Length: 218
Image 1: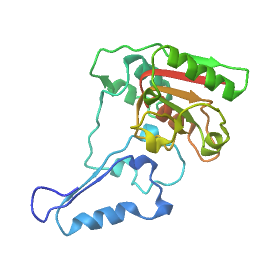
Image 2 (image 1 turned 45 degrees about the horizontal axis):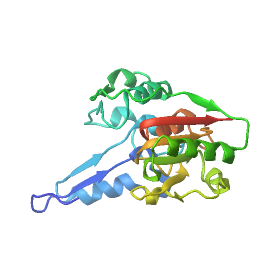
Image 3 (image 1 turned 90 degrees about the vertical axis):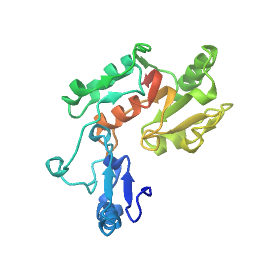
């Protein structure tokens, strides 16, 4: 983003907790961009949402200075925020979170299922439609892209994270949906893979929901 001041550049990096150093030293490149112009580098990250165990390229927390903590929550209902706190990697962060609205939302209860995953997802989506939720309101998130690719539910108006602003039900992985949001999130069998942090993965998925969160677990 270019500053209003001549010859001063600002570089803004979001979701930095899920950058990976082996993809290139992105932090050094960002610093180089602003060095000559005496600009500023802004790095936004949520360490509780880190969903891989590779090196991010960020320095240790004690060297991430100067810094400030953003604590105001506006995306999620009160009950979703309270539910999400059990997955905080840094539990003291839960004491800092401040929901700046009074929308309670619905109680979050995991729903166990024994039928096929596809049948459970279909039944859940049909129930949401009967409640008045439209395709634009819903995202179905799975743990990995392989899970997404194997999900076969015919007759549904599915899209990907790239269709988040369209009248389609988003079907994608938690990682690809990071940074996005919808009123209703259906989280299916959230679990860690070989290279993932389980708490970070589930926390990231849970906090995509604004109004209603449904967790389907086998």
